[in-house]
Length: 221
Image: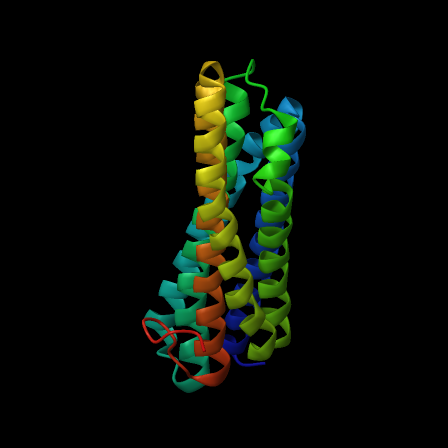
């Protein structure tokens, strides 16, 4: 195996390992906010530095491969895609950590179970978990058609986010004493929506790597 091939293989494994860690972080943060599990939120917080370490390692590996081997064609597309996927994964992990910070810094906050149900927070958590897992499946199998479904799922997340704002505003009008808790719920929903956006960004990079297609700013149809 050529030295370049060895480094590309190692880079691929590091990205997959980081991806799995981020999937775990997002799943745990979603479960924590739904069940007010502060211990699980602390677990996510403690693993945040591990995600950051992966990001630095992967960035360095990509830079070294480009500088030392000057890859071309699909190898170059792979490295460039990994650079952007790496950045998106780190941001996703940041949002997962941010969701958990709501529970860590405000241990007395308890969200209304009926409001959570009305805003479809459970569905939103399920959707972003599915999007992130599908992205990894598409990356590992190098099949862009698996990544395509992420775009429609991101639209569903956007719809839930938009509807939730109205539902929470109505709730605050009827329960002004719960406004503080509602602000934390809005923040969590917004972070989940941003996770969905970053999953779509990752899907775009998978298309670029596998099909040499640039989807950014061109729509997803």
